Length: 179
Image (cartoon, rainbow, N blue to C red; front, top):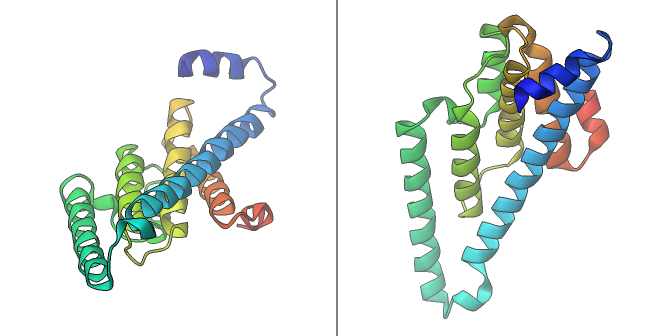
């Protein structure tokens, strides 16, 4: 699929290609941030719907159990599968931007997405903006790699992906442009 897309992209004038690539990265990163937020909301609603809880003591003990289980699951997932996905996401994204020219492994996206949805949706007090930016930036890096962009040329894709994801997470498109 990507080889066909890159062939089609090659038919466009040289100055037009980066614009199309940036639009593709922005679209995918923005959709990932929307999917991330939707997953968080659905899991939160599923777990913490008031009809599930009968009595204050059951609610308190159940909530404590869920939060401990979610923290344990997310911690094991991050430690065993992908330590690069731990943390808020912004420092990790900045590190890959400056140290590795924007290159980051694609598996970070999946682990960060699952751990973030389970952690935040399960009641941990975390924000969705940092993980959204890391997911969007990593998707930008992955898409740039699939389109044949060199390792040194991935910085723009990472910045575009992170900006699109932040714009979608905050529901503020002009903030993404400013970012």
